[in-house]
Amino acid sequence: MTDKPVGTSEFRHGWRLVLAASFGFSFFSVNLAAAGLFMAPLAKEFGWSRTLLSGGPSIATTMTAVLGPFFGALIDRYGSRRLALPGLVATIGAVCAFGLLNGRPWEWLGMWVVFGVVSVSIKSTIWTSAVVGLFERSRGLALGLTLSGTAIAQALVPPLANWLIEQWGWRTAFVGLGLGWGGITLFLAWLFLHVPGETTRTSNLDEPRLRTANLKSGLTVKEAWRNRALWQLALSSFLIMALTMGLTIHLFPILTEAGVTRKHAALLTGLSGLAGIAGKLVTGYLLDRIRPNIVGGLTLCAAAAGFALLIEGIASPTLIVIALLVNGYAAGTKTHITGYLTAGYAGMRSFGAIYGFMSALVSLASGLGPLLAGVSYDVLGGYAPFLAFGTIGCLAGGLLIITMPAVPNHGHGTE
Image (cartoon, rainbow, N blue to C red; front, side, top):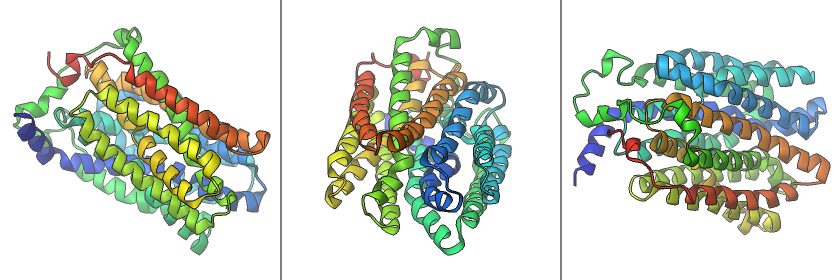
């Protein structure tokens, strides 16, 4: 009976933070969401292979994987705002720099290295840490809204980037995405990214429930290393992210090689992103009300259907649409589920460091997945082997979540 007013109070005080965090995570996803659209123009101009083009995003996500745990510890020490604002400025510059490419492969790979290093400051860890530190009763929905940023990027970036490329060329498209999307994000973060305990501007949050999530209860880093549930979550997150990110990066060329026009492929890719928004919101609502590992596991198992439908149904427009909706809905929840369950099973005592490790695995998987899909295309003659493995892997990842034990009490911020 008390959950509703508490949740309402949390959102009344925290909606601005959620808005800024959502935009922040969307900007982190912009370059990756647009990567598939730049493959054909860059291959045409420079003669680069799909493996090389896929290697760039893979390197960036590997860099964020290596740096993620260290950055998570910095969040525990310095807070989100002090790290996110300069990180946004650096990431804007890194995205714009891609417009300076001149055809040397090492430049392409080097720019992705730089992007990976600076963008670790605006990956999911920093936005998730800010939100879970404020929200308790409505944590699932708040995280769903925050992490919808990546789904928004997946929905809007493909048609936007395609329009920029067709109208102004790929060089201007990089600059437009960096300055345009990044500029709006920086402005919102400067205004609204204020977290209790990090700034006196939030001292008026007099609702006691809003501060319970800041209690230092939960596992230490050493205890987390010995926790079976967290290891199940880590393995599932790695597997699911590798497969879904591989499909996300290569979805545009998969569709165009099946005979779909660039314009329609961009719209269909955006449709998958819209389904991801629905997935985050619905899953966030359910996570707050039903045993979260059951909700998360069943949702991730459903992603297998998206891979399976694309294997045999690529020539059928109806099956393509169904596959994109199913995959977008399920895949759009993967980071959300990881963040929610990490907070639940680990607590808030060392959340930044523990989730930094989880996020590092996710980043490593994000780099591996597109590379595997590219190798499947170049070496095995197509995307079918990757899609078949994705079907099996998503089922396995979902089952790992379903078989986790119940969330311990410390995950609710109480002792």
